[in-house]
Image 1 (spheres, one colour):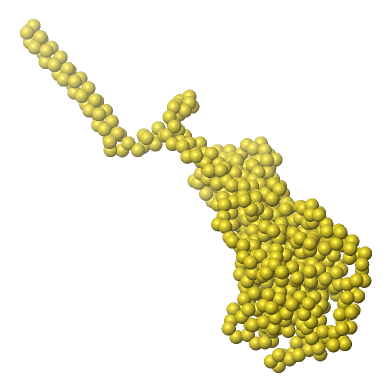
Image 2: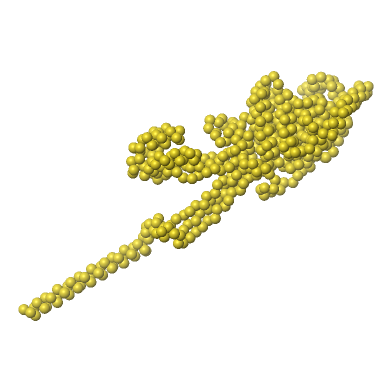
Length: 590
């Protein structure tokens, strides 16, 4: 019995031993298999779980660059704001929609309908991100934070703000809600203004300490854009233009101010304008930069170009006399005429009296190709080079056949259409002694651009002779354009607006001029579109604006007046007129 018991005990112990060993082997084999499965077959899940607990990415965001005027005054800046967003899944899990008073308060502060607001949450119950309101003010953000609605959060963003408002709206432009440039300089230089965000990816331990930096992308700071605009002159020009448009009941108007020596645009304004900080309910046509998009027949403002062309060709001299008798003529069955028979006129008198007959004879005194080439050389029919979106080239026909009547009307500024900026570019070329400079809206030396060579298209002597003639135009014919203490030259223009191949009943009043004549520094062009009252001529509606804008610009830039010459003219008021009387008597005797 004892032997049998010992034998049974040995068998029992061995069986248990093998069972335990088998269990241990099975457990370790299972662990090994599971470990192999996790590490070899499907390792991504645990990696993801580990990364969720230890891997972090810190973003280094950069705000949009600023736009400033030539003196550093801010025209467009980015300010910190908050954006309201919701996590619909958290809202639904916490039954937060039952907090009706809180949602009503949220809707009230945002100016939204509460039903439409909550409908966005109900419509997307499983989404983790829904915008509620973009870019709210800090005060609104603090109020929303105090509501403590589960699933409703705030995050920091930036919003574009335009301190100059409607004054510089057409130049600066604006951005959309995502800070992408839509109009003006904001659009043209969007890439430079945006910059590139940076980030740092690192791993942290259980206590939040950084233990490993995995990657780092350095942010690229945006470029601040410095405009050629002088905001002081811009404000003067806008104020005067807005007042004139309102006073003369005009549809619109534009003013351009250019630095003659550099080609920099010191002011470019339009009326009506708009507030870029609040564009709701703003008519789309107000966004149009009329100084570069709208074109008009410039009328008599182009007569100095015809006179300059004749002087350049040599068909006339500055003291030449042109016989305009009997005050009319026919060209190909069409009539060209002055209001009265002005008889024999000097080149200066042709510009002073804006004689169509005299201008026509000057135009026909040069070859057709030469005349057309000078119009193209002056910049008509091409962009000015400022690079703003939407710039028009105007209308300057490039065809082989031109009748004499078409050349005649071209010489008066009809049959051609130019933008206010193109007209300003020609007068800047004239004021610069015949040297055409590319225009720029960016302050020179602030952004690396491909150099564009200056181009001489008129001689210094002929340009100076026409400049002095334009001074006589102002002194004898356009007193509204005078500026106290300065010698001013310029030319009026009045054109009937064309439509559908014919002319209507609306007018455009223009004035283009420069100062000081002794050494021209500034060119100002004023366009008043469709004045609605009894006054519509350029000398009546545009020249007073020119005078006030030019006066303000000269003083802002601290340009010394040529008062000595003005004093001489005032001391001998009858000398010039006496010469003209003698000259006309000699013409009559001849």
